[in-house]
Image 1 (tube, one colour):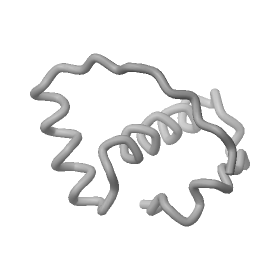
Image 2 (cartoon, helix red, strand yellow; image 1 turned 90 degrees about the vertical axis):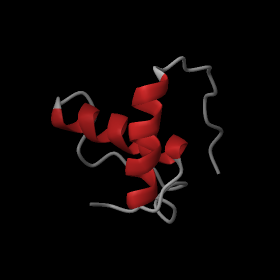
Image 3 (spheres, rainbow, N blue to C red; image 1 turned 180 degrees about the vertical axis):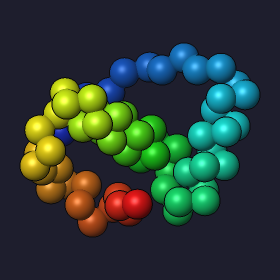
Image 4 (cartoon, helix red, strand yellow; image 1 turned 120 degrees about the vertical axis):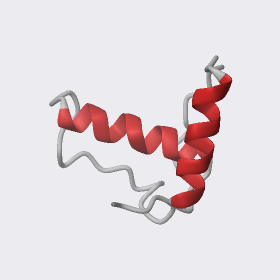
Amino acid sequence: MAVKKSFPLRINPKLYEVLEKWAADEFRSVNAHIEYLLRDSAQRAGRLNQTASFPEEDDNVKDC
């Protein structure tokens, strides 16, 4: 498994509550859901190769 980059994230508590509920609705952890949203946004913006593979996450992230 590839090593992931760790860093602190300061986030508005109300936004965190929204993300926490959203992540639960998608059966993800908040961390996994934030990573999913960032990856999806990067792909839509053309900043990330559409065929980029994240093998260490394939089994843990639900595609919507």
